[in-house]
Amino acid sequence: MDDTGIVVRAPQRMPRHQIDAFVDAHGAWIERQVQRRRERRLSSLRTLVRGLSLSVLGRPVMLDIQDGVRRPRWRGDAAGGDVLVLPDADPVRALETALRARALTWFEGRVAEHCHVLGVAVPVVRVGAARTRWGSCSQRSGIRLHWKLALLAPELADYVVAHEVAHLREMNHSERFWSHVSTLCPDWPALRKRLRREGEHVPTFLPPGGGDC
Image (cartoon, rainbow, N blue to C red; front, side, top):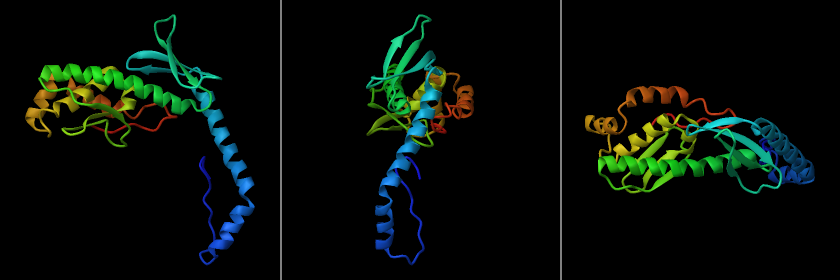
């Protein structure tokens, strides 16, 4: 059983109509159990998220949950950081939505600046959630960057951006490619090592991010 339903196991020779009849007869109970499980999960996530402090692209962000809020919204605080107000219904999903939007704005700015340095046209920039890569580049579809880069130090996120922009010059990992990376990000060897270490340490209620560029 998970938040979406249950898995029914039955003897291999049991007719399908008997299985369906059993599920139908217990449908109300199944729905109640799934709903209770979902509510327990959301309750634990609300407790975990409320008051949590994150660093988002180098800025301190305090998370808050409020009833009656339909979508995430940002506001400043007296200490010079940000407060991200999340709806009570599903704060983790709302957190991802807010971070995706903020990350995209930052990515677009950094991509444009690096493209200016290399003298290449600015491509379409998208945010994604690849399981094994922090970023990717295609001449046809542009640059895609993992939204969880927003939870890492900005210099690490910028290394990934520089890496992908360099691919607009060289769609390989040749010496010429790395020379372009060095132009944009001279400290890339150390940053690459840090990314491999620190990229695994996103908040535990979020799945890990990508592994490499």
